[in-house]
Image (cartoon, rainbow, N blue to C red; front, side, top):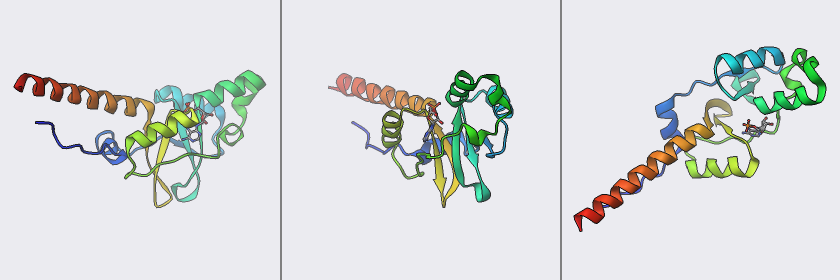
Length: 150
Ligand code: AMP
């Protein structure tokens, strides 16, 4: 029997991976940001202001662009000089497929989760792919069971 469809939501991913997010402030230097990205083995950091509000996002791509255009001098600049201010976010109730669409349309790999205007988690493309592969594997297993039961 084919199991009932349960929508894969942002909440279900966060319940498994946790809600901690590596953050920086707009005043954090690009050199400190690079250290954070490398030590924590991540691709992006969310920039927060008062009350954990999302004021920007900065990824390894922004660092590479700044290095390419201004050279190593950008390392002493604040993160606010290179971050993206217009951040696309999502909420816990949102379906993962809709977060995937946001990533594809905006060509980015990170989507911060907000609740009550505060940062409440982060979904990366790695999380989305991991869960999508899990879903496809269980769909394939159901189909195999269905065929063998017939
Ligand atoms: P990424 O693919 O996440 O490394 O980001 C690629 C570019 O998109 C960088 O310039 C980021 O600052 C920007 N970016 C990343 N995530 C988001 C987001 N959720 N909303 C808007 N811009 C983003």
